Image (cartoon, rainbow over all chains, first blue to last red; front, top):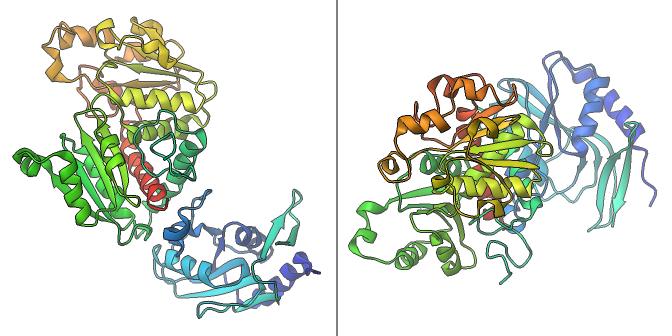
Amino acid sequence: MQLPDAELLCADLVRQLRPHVTPETGMVGIHTGGAWLAERLHQELGFVVPLGMLDISFYRDDYRKSGLHKSVRASKIPFDVNGRHLLLVDDVLYTGRTVRAAMNELFDYGRPETIRLAALVDRGERQLPICAQYVGTSLTVPKGSMLRLDRDASGRLTLRIDA
Amino acid sequence: MSANPQLNAKGALTHLLTLEGLPREIITHILDTATSFVGVTEREVKKVPLLRGISVFNLFFENSTRTRTTFEIAAKRLSADVINLNISTSSASKGESLLDTVDNLSAMHADMFVVRHAQSGAAHLIARHAGPYQHVINAGDGRHAHPTQGLLDAYTIRHYKKEFSGLAVAIVGDILHSRVARSLIHALNILGTPDVRVIGPQTLLPTGVESLGVRVFHDMRKGLAGADVIVMLRLQNERMRGPLLPSAQEFNKSYGLTPDKLALANPDAIVMHPGPMNRGVEIDSSVADGVQSVILPQVTFGIAVRMAVMSILGGS
């Protein structure tokens, strides 16, 4: 299956987001693909507030079923979320469970004014009432396949499907 | 059942009884996970929901304040329900056997037991007896093992020294009675520490300690030369009057960490102590409170390490 160019999608997200970014807006990327995307968006949109990162392993709803993830990274939110407009960034929006976990974790740092969601790809099949305000593209991917973002040594982003 | 009673059929950690024989990947996974938990305790809400609905029973058959408290805090920060059993006033003193106690707590739907016992092997016994979805953590059994202390010591060393390869670690004092020393030596060996030394009088070193892969020193000044990490062990006052030692003052002279002895180690060496300290016996106040001391960070890291262990066991 022909996958869209992640770099073009990223550039499109930058265009969509630019009018909505203020010097006070906070950005939070979800490990790992969302964090790579967030690093790019954060830089290209000239964010003033430092970038936050979340690893949602401690908030997953499948912990009892699958246990703790093998590689947990530290979450780091280097700004006060209280009263702030937040932009949450993930590479692929799918069931919505990751975003649910990320929002729960964010609220343990404080009470944001708003949270808006940006995703490079929306692959549909939502299992929770969650939607993204900024989307690079929508794509239908066969069930059971994993759509993921890669970053090579030069920092170039590409999409890949793991069957 | 697999050969290692701590691992399940898939090779995942399901009890933590001893560090001896654990694969390096499991220890590294615990230390890495603990790093993520350190950040949790610095947030507005110092809790994550992982162990919501899980009941953790602290079974302390032997006195402990620090270890029991840090296990309790760790469990609470994981959102577990914690039940502390004061064994001295419980059925054990009325003659109930250890396994009967465990059976009764299991009937109350205990999911996890944190066990401290004066007898070596007590946690193993409970683990063998436990149901398939119950987890046991050894919080110190006799002279045998204190794995979470060994892990938090390893975490502290890694935090300050980054790598274990190339490190010289000196463990000083009462090695004979110390489950802390045993667990730390196993952790250091598994993590690939090239130079582990034990320093103490002959009477406080177990016979054949060399077989654990350590170098033995009776002269502290020689043993500290070039050390990157110094781990002081508690000298128990109750043993002071026994035949093992002449006196606390004598011990301090030979094996107490004083500023002049500390100067023999590497200038950036860190000083650790599992607590509680006997100031003026195994460690001088000026060293315990000095810039090289990481004794209080050890306590803080201990909570994150115990959170990591509980969350890994609870999901297995």
